Image 1 (cartoon, helix red, strand yellow):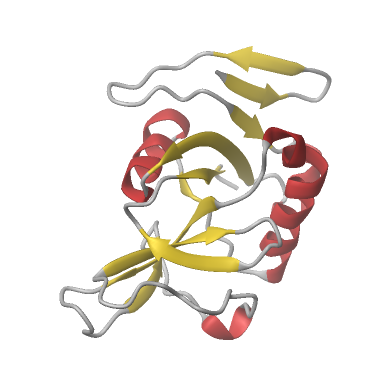
Image 2: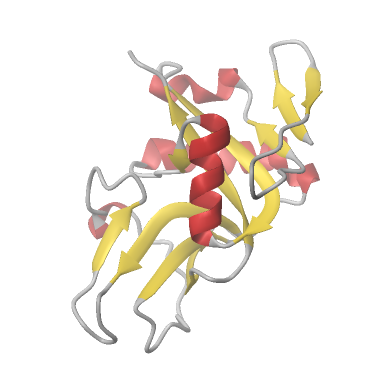
Length: 169
């Protein structure tokens, strides 16, 4: 089941992909996306999927990708959505589009957004949770915790996720 916000009402829609049924979707109200001039919509999907499966659902159902939170404005908007809109939906432990990939254990890694448009600038965000448990992993992904810390987990773990869709200017 999808929950889609409009200006005046909450609408329930049903969607089915070839491999995953999406039970619940909460789209952030457009009025909260002012920082992007309406060009970005964030959507919370409460199904718990592995990172790559979540990425596929964002692409197939919404024409987007996992959320790229690459500025303080985007970070604040997601934080605001979580408090005003998503808290009643069971907000917490959602995949975002940030991930590490490496071809070998303990080899060089790149911190990238799922849309592969840009590397992550670590100087722009400092709320990473300490105590990562990914030693020996060749890939791992980030999720947002309820306290709004970003936490690294193996990509095979199942979590809810935040999709992002962008419209043309």
